[in-house]
Image 1 (cartoon, rainbow, N blue to C red):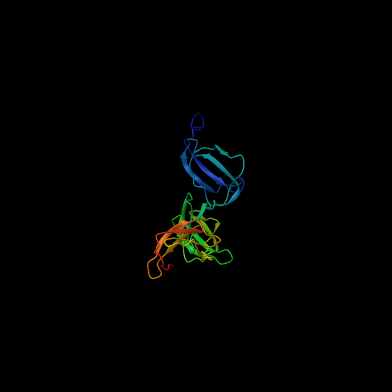
Image 2: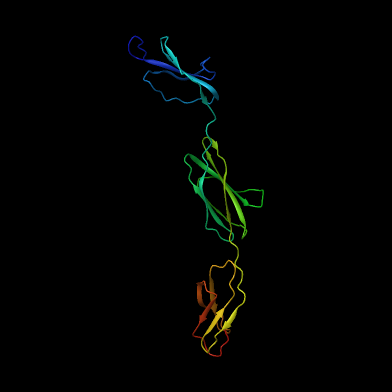
Length: 231
């Protein structure tokens, strides 16, 4: 107290790392006796720490009643929100949510069947990376870790699979042929989402679109020239 018979205006704040036997670390010297103090915790590791507050110019002091621990500083937080997008036959974009306190990120990737990681980015400040030169229809693992003032965090991983190339349609057929129209058809292709169909006069080099992104396996073409050969 700074009142009454004690009348202590300033105090020293000391740290013990041996359970209160000795107080060798000075956390604050001759600081105002106002009931609180912001200190910098030293890097000395111990699970038997205690605090001593002693009067400056007087004999009074107090020591904390129980031990506390000064441990390793926490590692950087782990990245979350891992996402794989814009996936094509040979490329993909990988991204994650920004981590509070992060200075940068390290990113690696590899085919899931491989044991060797490929570096995609080191110390990037972005939260996404574009990957290219990938193999089609292949599963990839990717990982990201955070770099921050406390050091380097742990890797977290995610996975994606590149698209498979489309197979060519088979079973092409022409039916219901008239002097000016025809129905063309084909066998359904496994994995196909839709089909584009073009046609042209066999003597022409220019294709005409009959239908785009149809989910049907046939389409009717009209406005043809009688007795003409069409591709």
